[in-house]
Image (cartoon, rainbow, N blue to C red; front, side, top):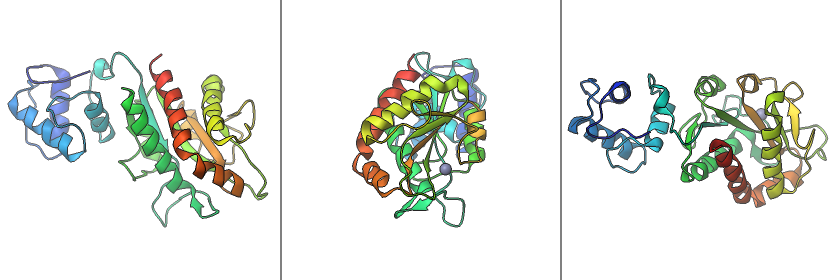
Length: 258
Ligand SMILES: [Zn+2]
């Protein structure tokens, strides 16, 4: 999907209407002219995108994240699926930040993983939306709303247990996504070398310690990266963060392109 100067139609109109919600004052007439091009450039510059005045998949992804609606069925790039990457909990203090242990906070680490994996997956030409701009973790309701638009949806969490020796990786989802869940668990395992829990890393979404599994019910997969309550798990996560994000990005991009 690419919208550029000279294009006409409903998707141009929807994009113009979106730009108007971002402070522009375009006539949303469905004709992509010089004024629209200028508005696209400003939008791109504001969001750290290449400022070329053409709305390609990265620009459209960011716009969808910010509420772009009304796109036709061809809004998704024809070559791939739309991926939602979500950080569990929030990183806002005073709100539900998830588990805190060994100097780590679940909602904070989840955002770091999401942001890094999103960058790496986008580089592979996949359209990615996130539940917040870089460093920001919006509430679950936002992730659920975005999940409706996405074909593949993944959310990061960390596990916790009273017993500090509890260890390992699990991915929760509905049974329909068992295989992909196992691939994601295996990706984390390759980097962290921690045990795979459940069925080769996969568990039913009804088996976790988290009660907020609406994300799985919406077709999503929830990665319990490791146990924040286990110092060894935490060390392995910290030492292998970049490797883990790289392998996860490979697996996610491959799924998006098949
Ligand atoms: Zn959690």
